[in-house]
Amino acid sequence: MFHVGTLQSKDLERIDLEHLWHPFTQYRLYSKFDCPLIVDSARGFELVDVDGKKYLDGVSSLWCNIHGHSDPELVEAIKSQCEKLCHSTLLGLAHVPILELTEELLKWTPSNLSRVFYADSGSTAVEASLRMAFEWWQKQNSPVARKKKRFASLVNAYHGDTLGALNVGFNELMHSSLKPLAVQSFTVPAPHVFRFFESMSAEDALEASLSVLNSLFDNHANEIAAFIIEPLVQGAAGMWIHPAEYLREVASLCKKHDVFLIADEVATGFGKTGEMFAVNCAGVLPDLLVLGKGLSGGYLPISAVAATEQIFNGFVAPVEDFKTFFYGQTFAGNPLAAHVAKVNLELFRKRDLLGKIKSNVEYFSSLLSDSLSTLKHVDEVRSFGFMVGIELTQGVGERKPYPPEALACWKVVRRARELGVVIRPLGNVLVLMPAVAMGREELKRLVEVTVEAIELELG
Ligand code: PMP
Picture 1 (cartoon, rainbow, N blue to C red):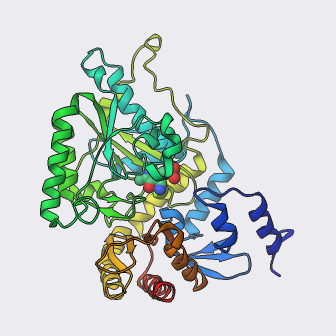
Picture 2: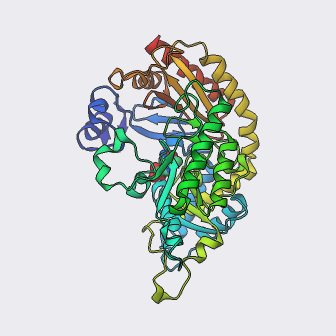
Picture 3: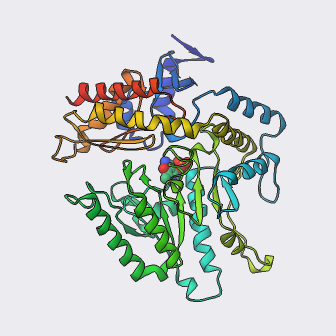
């Protein structure tokens, strides 16, 4: 039996099953079906469990790992910062790593953004962006401006787990018991052919979705403080992709109707689409850009909202006016996380990571379509950059989803794990999201094992 500190792996498993409460995890499934995988270490693109078994990390540790695990330069960054300053608050004080990070980050973000606010997770950064937009309007002198009290978002959006984020990402199945707490946003469907505009061509779906969008703005723009969007790829909804044209139209309507545009790039940011940010793919300038996950290379928790000077100035006033942005977490902008985030950004340049992912994206997407298109239970493979959703159905062409109790996706995930690859389910969608720096050999293994697991489980 493998030893980990004083506990053996069977003790760890017992503690896991008896005492740990996992996020987004149904205990019935976890304890009976999903054999626990207890990670002890990780190197490169592999996780190593307490028994020494290696697994390819096919979802970059929940979409955040960029360069691989235990990267010597990132580890050294944390160690060296540890010796100088582990934590100090940003409430009324600054520290060197956060200022260095801010300078570096603003070299990458859209040119209209000049202020960076830090938080400690994607959700708390989304929450900050919603409050910034909402309060900005409420702090205006004009009663017309103060009518802007609602948000707009896409159907099936996901923006995190705080109550504010829930309001712009409400899901009937998951959140019905929270309904009394929710102030739901206006929602519009993105042009997803197979989801909302079935049997239409992509062009017709785009036109139909733009017409819904236009009527939202025509009828309600005076009530809307901000439109929040996961640009180009709705990740947690199941990797649903909309065309750049749609995003551009959202941006242009926001501008025309005085609605702030919040780009939530917690999932799409830091190279995963092939560009540093998804908004770059469409040439869109958001008023607020929300970042998380890959900001620190996926090493430590830190998130950010990059804002325009216009929004920042809405909160600058004499103390007695109480226009201060009253929001911030204890560990927001932690120095260790900030320093590793700055080094992460430097490594993007030093290692030409965007060049590398661009050269691998085509290889990866043709590998996916060549290997998956002939499978009997794969109805659609959606991929954009390294963000992949594989839609499993009972029969190709029928679009008949497996019922939840069939556990179809879970079975594939479990089988892949037995074969040494970690991937994750989102309903009937299998998600792959390799680290941005992953090379062709590992990408090939990821796809091969996924195919084998689907075939073995579903036929
Ligand atoms: N926004 C988006 C688009 C996300 O995908 C996520 C997390 N997957 C979040 C916000 C929330 O981030 P976190 O889990 O760090 O709170």
